[in-house]
Each structure stands twice: as structure tokens, then as C-alpha cells.
Length: 344
Image 1 (cartoon, rainbow, N blue to C red):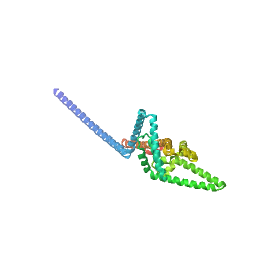
Image 2: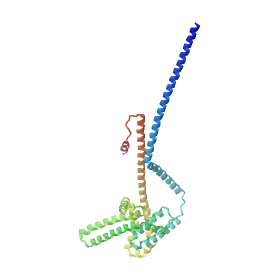
Image 3: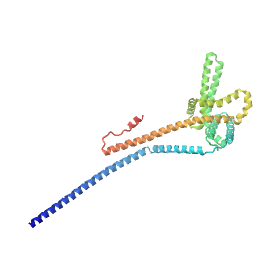
């Protein structure tokens, strides 16, 4: 009986050992399978990360300048506006009398330089352009400008273009004088017709002259575009054109058509009159130029927003397509054309 008991105990111990071995083997197999699955998942996730990073790099390489420029320009504009506001609040203005005397001295010096530059007659266009250029500078808080030196620097810089524009104006005036002489000799309806044509030409010439030389002083452009832009500016800002026209036309016309007035105040034109008219009309001209600047900034902001939006849109589409490839998503790939069409 004892032998049978011992043999039964041995058998049970052997069975327990076998069961423990099987459990250990099964657990080791399960752990190996889990490790292999984890490795596979990590490899897939690494591949997804690499692809997404590569797509990010490609998108950045495609348009890094636009996005960075967008952020840079907007931040810089905000910073500049903040600095301007702080300067405006903390700036201490000079007394009114001192500012008046400074402006009077600058206008006097500009008038003398203008008269000297106009002595060649052909150089009148360059002289007017330099006069407006310096008036714009002085009104933009550049009170430390060296009037004489910088006036003639502007005169030389714009000499070729402004002189050609002035010669075109002289040619147009010559044609108008010929038309006037023709009107005097023609009878009846022909004279009336040519009179209407001459008046229309004078109106167009006045519209062009109001902004022609200030545009030449402020912006780089071709002669044809400068004539066209000056006409469009006058038509688009008729009230401003009227103020400029009155500042220049009324004193000159009244002085030329009244000999008594001419011989009474002629010396004022040599001393301060031309400079004062240019300085006063520049205040109105600068308001028009501010409108141009605001319009240009709005258009630039729209372009920057479009560039940023298109860059961001392409990145989202690429990431979505890459993730759908590795995650087994059966949905339709993202198409950039859908975004563009919806934006329109």
C-alpha cells in the first residue's frame, strides 16, 4: 500500500511539473507574440512619423518664405503701429510760433531754389517735381532736411523724366493755342465745335496736371502710367482736385489777368508764393497718397492671407492622405481643388 501511495505521489508531482512547464512555455510564447506586435506597431508608427515629418519638410520647403514673411510682416506692422502711437502720445510739439517760423523759412528757401531752377524754362518740370518732393518730406516730420542741398539732389534725380513730361505738356499747350487761333478764324458752327473740343482738352489737362509732378516725385513709374494715374486720381478724388486747382489757378489767373495786381505783388512770387502754394497743396496731395498706401496695404494683406491659407491647406491635405494610407482608411483622398472651389 505504501508503494502504491508513493507511486501516485510521484505521478502527481510529474503532472504538476509538466503543467508548470506548459504554462511557462505558453506565457513565453504570448510575451514573444506581444513583443513582436509591439515592434510591428512601433515600426508602423515610426514610418507614419517619418512620412508626416517628410511631408512637413516638403511643405515648408515649398513655401517657407511666404509663411514666414506673412508672420514677420504682420508682426512688424503691429510693432510699428504701436511705436507710432507711443511716439504720438509722448511727443512734445514745439510752440506754434516756432513751428510757423520754421515752416516759413523752409518755404522761403524752397521758393528761391524753385525760381533758380526754373530759369532754363525747359527745366520747369524738374523744378516743380523737386518742389513737391521737398514739401512732402517737410510735412512728414523731416524738419532737419538740408533744403538747398536736398532740393537740387531731387532736381537731378528726377530731371530726365520730369523734363520729358514738361515737354509733353508744352506740346499739348502748343496744340491748344493753334486750335484757339483756328477758332478765331472759323465761322459759326465750326467755331462752336472746336471751342467745345478745346474746353474738354483744357479740363483733361487740368485733371492731369494736379497730380502729375507729385506722382513723379513720390513713385517710380513710366511716363505713360504717370499721366494715366494722375488723371485717374483726379477723377477719383474730385474734391481734392478742386482744392489743388483753386490753390494754384486762382492766384495765378488773378495775377496774370490784372496788371495792377501783378505789378503790386509780383515780388511775392520771387520770395514765397510758389513755395506756399506747393506747401498748401501738398497737404491735400498727401491725404490722397495715404489712401493709395492703405489700398496697397490691404491688397498686400489679402495676398499674404491667400498665400498662408494655401500653404496651410496643402499641408492639411498631404497629412490626411498620408495618414489614410498607413491607417488603412478607405475614405476618398483629400483634394486641394475642393478647398479652392469652396473658397471661391
